[in-house]
Amino acid sequence: MGSDAKKQGQKSKPEVIRLASLVDYEATSIASKEIVDRKAASVAVFAFDKFQEIVEHVLPYDVIFYVFEGEAEVIIKSKSYLVKNGELILVPAKTPHTVSAKSKFKMLLTTIKE
Image (cartoon, rainbow, N blue to C red):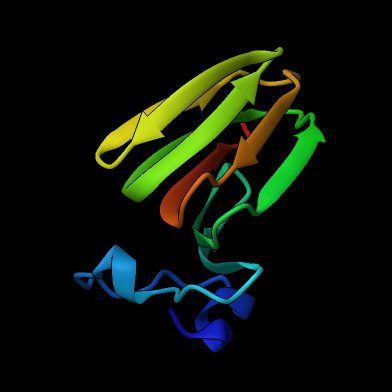
């Protein structure tokens, strides 16, 4: 998606996107790329290197983590969930959660803002 189109509020053209190719792993880091950012929702792709995590936080809206490569540990209200390749998990709005990598993994994050 071109940044000019986003700035002007135009819709992007339909295109087939291979998720895994949108973001590469970076040593000792979490890489991300935003795909869509709209008033009602946003979509981004993340690549977590081994042992990287997003510490516990709370968002004011629902989020969906869809793991499409590897495995992630998602902790919601102190309960641990292992989310594997091809699986997703919903985190309700205003719920404390943590996302961590026991090994490298990639995920699609969808945020429902309205």
